[in-house]
Length: 610
Image 1 (cartoon, rainbow, N blue to C red):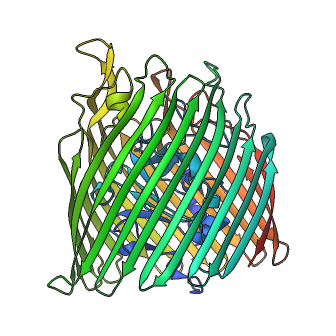
Image 2 (spheres, helix red, strand yellow):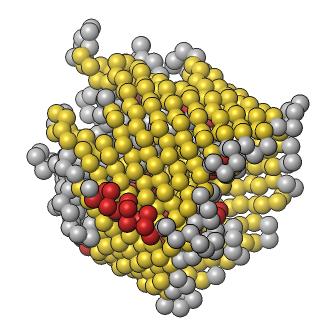
Image 3 (tube, helix red, strand yellow):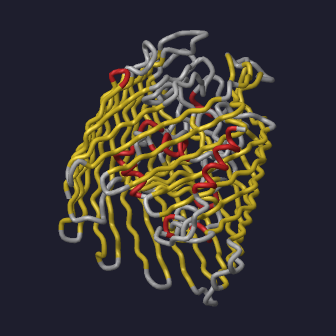
């Protein structure tokens, strides 16, 4: 009832459409990650969430995945505290896209400037490194995208672009905030044009005691970007980042037990791009490194090195036909030492080579068709092939109808095949998922856009811990899991003058539940902006969230959480901010045994110089 009431109220607000002063680009943004070239959202095959640079700068959340979850019904994250996610066996921050993500968070691929952000031994992304201060923009593909991006892209892809300011000659930003539970956050950003180059850097310091005893978090992060534009029609950049964080987890209330971790992560990317009238290409060369130490005695070093080449040729024999493809090489590995008795100490390494090819046909502005495939050769598994096909039909005045089908995959990780005593080096096969989607997009006028989708997903060969038919050990990683999901979602966006409002809703029917995923989620977010004042509200409603208690499945209580934030520009340099999370002090949990904080308050001061 409350969901319907909020929807009706918001629709009543947006019913006035007589003005066309808003910017239609906000309602039909340009996205890249879904097809690896700029295209309007209405013409993109995949469903994509775009977080523009302006939204990044105005976001009050510290982490981009928190912002995505608070503002989009189709995105959920698992969380056990207000600040920080942690890593290891209790690590949270799982990015769940339309209910998929798995545990550990191995079903969603995260890229930073084209570098796969993957732990070398465990194959999952690292959510505590996705600080808002270090980002320029973000895009998220909802649905399998392995044809273009390879392993782990079963649930989707989150593509992050590191911080810089190409739109201004010089920019310096200083922020200091603090609030509940002794939380302190300090940020410095600087970007400057020097001839044809842009030199940018950032640093952030954050610490918090969080709401529970023994739930501390301490993070130091920084990064740089050095970019040359228009150098003989080339764009060349070098970017890097470093994150060091410590955390303490008190354990679930039904079984308190303190666990700590000391994590260090770094990554460097060299990128080269060129665009011409009939062709374009890009190169990414990258390196990732990580060092981990946990209170249970496990210590490790992670490595991830790779190269990705991509090219596109237009007008291949016919003006409307284009051909694109590329090759990639990735080396994953690491070392485990000083481990527990369940760990095989030593150095580990594996490689993957892949090639993909895609063709696209466009007929003026009303029809496009894409079909492509990826061939993968892995040093440990048999050769593998996945595909994707899709079409967009845009009859005049009736919006865009989207259709897609494809397969996605995830290679078994080193920890599943080699690292533990229960690892299986002999018979594991890549996990597979097949996805189908029918979508719709329409910009009704200068103020309103609507999106919707119905989707199905089926998965096989999921890796699970099961009794070993030939012990020892008693259990072993084996391919036996499946999932069968379907659902639907919709989104209505309104932009007019100083107002921006968004309703989004998702319903999931899951035969096999993923933890921390609501069956139904509704989000209403919106705000009002003038030259001096910015006000935003986020209303998140979650119903029938799946969780467990010591391995026993259960359903959490429904909850309604309201977050509010405001900024006031004192003058051209100085602004004040205030954020209130859980405004009405809702008692709720996202993971069973970990009560989320009640009302929390943080205020801040920012100094911006252009």
